Amino acid sequence: MFLLSICLLISLASSKIYLHENFDDGYQSRWIVSEDKSVNHGELSLFQKLHCEDGDFSLKLMNDSSYYHITSKFDGVLDTTSKPLFLSYVFRYGQNIDCGGSYIKLFAELDQKKFTRDSPYSVMFGGDVCGSGDRKIHLIISHKGTNYPLKKRIEFSPDTLYHILDLHISTDRKYTVKLDGEVVSEGVLEDSFEYLPPKKIDDPSDKKPVDWVDEETMVDLEDKRPEDWDDRRDIPDPDAKKPDDWDDSTDGEWERDQIKNVNYKGTWAPKEIPNPKYKGVWAPKQIDNPEYKPDDTFGKFSLTAAGFELWTVKSGTEFDMIIVTDEEKVAHD
Image (cartoon, rainbow, N blue to C red; front, top):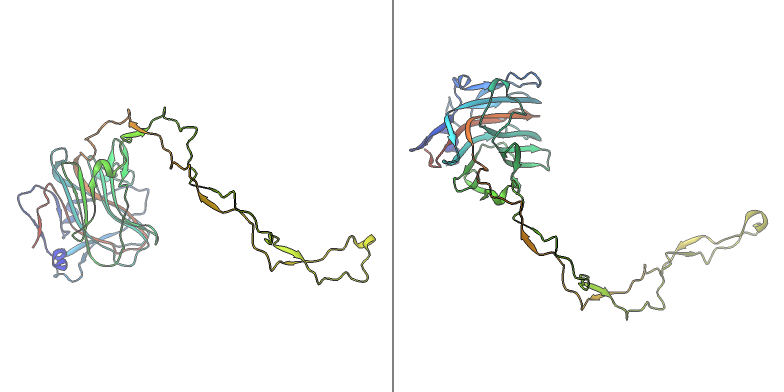
């Protein structure tokens, strides 16, 4: 079923389609490559998708160690103040990758020919690999000039298979991320992104009582060091003999060599016992934060374009079937 879904066109019922790209011979008229000269741009090419019918293409990144900056305008403006956002696309790494992105960006305003990695975006979504320990799915939302990443990291394991990524941001300020149809992250925007100060803060006037005991254990005063406890790590060698020709006046005072003490037991310390006066970890009481003010504009945009701003060490990454719409009623025939 999944294989069929990445090989066939997506049909959308009763929804406004702002971007629907399946990459064919005419895609160059819909996608603009940046004219930015400050980076080394790689070549883009149509590629016959694996296991799909002839003529079913993806867009492929062709060069190693290259940048790819390409964007496409929407058919209209998607205003997420009144409509939900639904973004879906297919990606595939053409080889085992150790550094490279597979994410897409959405824009409110964009000069396509001057598009760079520093161009402001509204949403950044998709996979990113940077070494074996940093493999994640980004969800970053821009708000008032600052980019806010999702607080809870979305891990993923890159391979060379085709995958579908879905993002849904609803009008009731919730988000859902799906990978191959399975929910991998969801939540409320306000709880999931740190764009607001906390609702509650420590009461600065609340002070720890002077008699508050927060030591959970205490030294057992009745615990005594055993008389036979030996804490000497090294001891003089009892078998050492002073050389017959040793002259204290010229050689100095003779001392035995040190050897390891087989009776060494370590540094002695009295045992710890529960503290009967322990009251727990003290914390100041919480009060309303006067700096906190709800902001319902987070995640609200007038989106006009989508694009890829990528750097990859290894070539071969593919993209296809990009959908931006205001409804989640997407069916894979």
